[in-house]
Length: 130
Image (cartoon, rainbow, N blue to C red; front, side, top):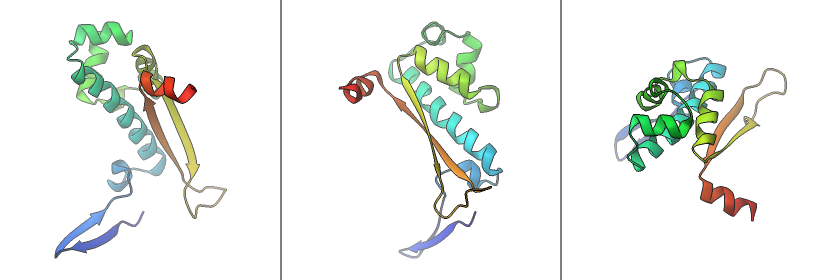
């Protein structure tokens, strides 16, 4: 992937792709999975922080062990699967949507697709269904 270089007021910037893992050189498929897990783990971490949950409280709410909650709060992506994280979010009262779309200019065979995860709070879910 070619990054865009820009200069603003004499300061040089490199504009990222929107996926830090891709920008760091991970293969596209791995970068996509890491970014999905990262976005979803951030939602769980924000919930733990915003509600000042203890590890024990979060474990009970997410229906997982306390060590699994520690993995979440440390951002240990390598030990957390999308299924595990989705389950925790669901137990916490969230909806998870994963959207896949073809990247602009990609070819149908072998082209890279972009995937993104959106975590919807219970209030967002209720409003969307109305």
